[in-house]
Image (cartoon, chains in turn yellow, green):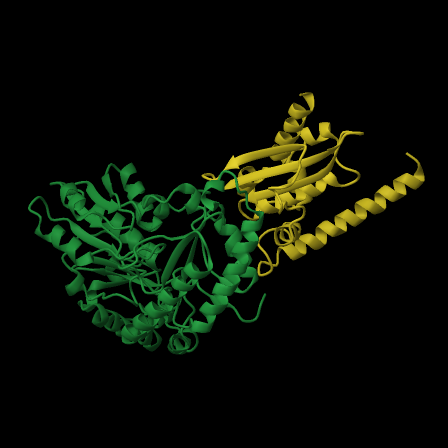
Length: 164
Length: 396
């Protein structure tokens, strides 16, 4: 690794460290919010909600969870046929704050930097979503983070239709 | 944090009445004595506790020595259930309770099951009431205690307490002791023990505009009980530990105040609550009420709003300055939906969509109007992002 690159990496590490530090301080402010600030942002201002689901033409649709368990997530994707990357990722969720925030964050991750590769989308891990959300309480982790599963279902649905 | 908040979670706890705080202050500052001490400071504290005991006993119509001060509703319930069961196990090891009791009662019963007791958990109907027939049938020769809450904390359903007492007292099979958790009932229902006919009654201070961490157990003098806390032998040996003097004084004052204004407050709250519910129904589609409409605490509204998950709604309302609570699994520590809502047979997907508003002494009509407005907006926002399938059918 060149010195230049190393330097950049060090600065990046330093900045992320500082960001985490600031976040920690803010998160301790219990009067402010019960989850991380990132969760707060995605909960109050969710990204990529699908409002016109009746007319939306998706390439793949995935739905996971059940209303009895308190969390259902539906994901719609559009795929760029040239490079097999996700062009659009929309969702609707019935669930708690962390379910909404994790759906929103997943949709951002799936579409940022030119879109997620379909293979990558199938192997997205819940830990990756939670990490980007600045963490979630343990008890919330397993039940409410459904984004990766819904996305995988949507990609599989796309493949199913693409084959036909 | 918004400066002006609308607090509609009074069943969880109430703000302290300024008059209560005033009578407590001296016992936090200059009158700091330990009631067990012989000297002036000790006697002053002792005197304050006995005066408070007198006040409490006058409100519920019992003898002074039948009041045991505790650290609150949970401890009173624990002491009643564990203490009475263990002290009377030579007479039998069967206890009857209901499936919608507070966890302080249910978990004490679970503990007793491990000690070899047999517990019958009575069912409730869709309104949250126990069946008097089932109660009567459940009484066995070895039944030593029945514990049924006076009014439910989540859905506000009031049990027919005098009728329950009558069945227990008049049955020919055995003579069980009747305990009732009245934490939610105090302040709106009669707690005259001669009228309601209970042997043991749990009362908490934190729901009646008194301080937290204090409450009492009314205990009929003829009842055999053993302590669950050991030490210096305070409270007739039933509750060791230096008394929480200031809080006991505050609790007694809070109880007196709430008894004095009970009638007018009930009338005011019932009007306000019915108006609130009417407004919710007029403005929001697909809302169902949980619990009974008639036999219900004056301050309780518990509804399920289809497609709107409870924790999400509570947090969005909180952001808009309104405090309320939910029986949704997502908001609970054990991640199970409310055992009360499940107990009355609410489908799980609607239990997750439950929200409880409990009005209080400081709630005004304008607070309700604002709440309905933000509730409407919040429900709209949440439904816009909620999954339609498989809830689709109910939307059409």
